[in-house]
Length: 570
Image (cartoon, rainbow, N blue to C red; front, side, top):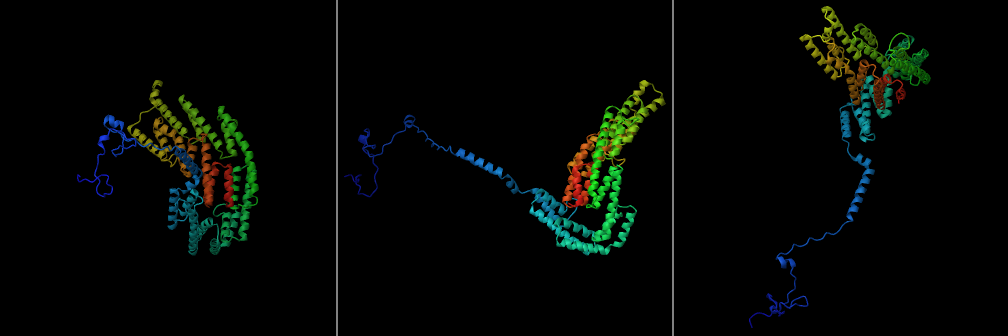
């Protein structure tokens, strides 16, 4: 007995003592996977046995997921297709910063009482601009309705204060925005009653009749305007209605007379006035048809005259006796249509040809012949830039000839007289004048104001030194500068400035054939503006825009359509 409990004594619940097993049979294998020492069997790693170091455990082998790539491609394709098909709807979900800004300014203008105007800052203009950006915008539509209601309130207040013109203006705006309604009808009747009470109808009718008898049909104190004033105060006044019909008859008779005389321009102007005064005049369609027929006849004759003028120009038959010269043919074309751009350009080309001949005469020393040629050119293109430069050169040639005669210098020394020496004062004045001319040109003061325009200042510089390269170059580049400023003004919507630059160009370079395209572009812009004004109810502004377009492109079919809309109130 050694005092140790037997290891096989399972009935004992005490601590189990560690044991080494049967050490006598360690080298004998056990068939059961366990040694008879009672311990589990293990196998030593070969690397550990060989090197004494165990190799690190192998990383777990990833599971293959090849099916994920096709699935991802399908998802991407599906999302892309959905975005493509729904792009318009998604685009509509993107907030428009520009639209919100316009609407915010419009609502501010409405709160401040700036209801209508023509400077782009009134509530009506801004709400209409918002509708142009998004036609179905509810805020813009509701804003215009609120502007109309505010105009109703303004008309009521003006009527109470007996400011009838203000009330009439506010009521007209409200009618355009609201499209009528009980308030509009009420105010219309009240305003008519107020005018009828304040206007001496009998005196107006008497004045209108006197104007009609005197043949004074147009103008603020003409028969047409006076009869319309009576009708605005008393819409059912039979005497004024009959008098207005008489005015229409008189205008129609004058138009017929002009058509019979072949005066196309006068006939067209009379028919336009008749259409504005009495858009529903019964004879107006027949007059327009007669005008179209005359137009067709004149167009053939006009085209022939312009073609013959161009042929004569190419053949060198510029001016002279007879009716087969370029000058004669272009003048015949202008007799048919005084506003024809091609005929005007033809005369400018004749002037340019004369200037070229004058330069050649100056080169050969024939100053007198050059002067005669430049005088002829001045009758056709008095403000041509090339003409001004040639006249300056002629003046210098005369100074040189006078100096030669006074000093009796030899012909070999005449070249030295081509560039006379200027005094220090003249040189300083010349430099200042050219600098002022350059500044005026950049500021758009090309032909106006007189004396301070780039054109006049360059001519002043050339009067000091007719051969000054800077002044000649500045003068000769004014046409291109006018074209550049025209394009800038047209792109920014400043049509008045564009019109001024086109007018400058027609003076500076009347023979430039490219002006025809510029005229068409400007006419189109004026018609675009007129269409917007008609949509906004600004019939007076639309009439002015269409008048500007008519001067540029009188035969444009779109112009006729817009004029019809204006006259019908559409």
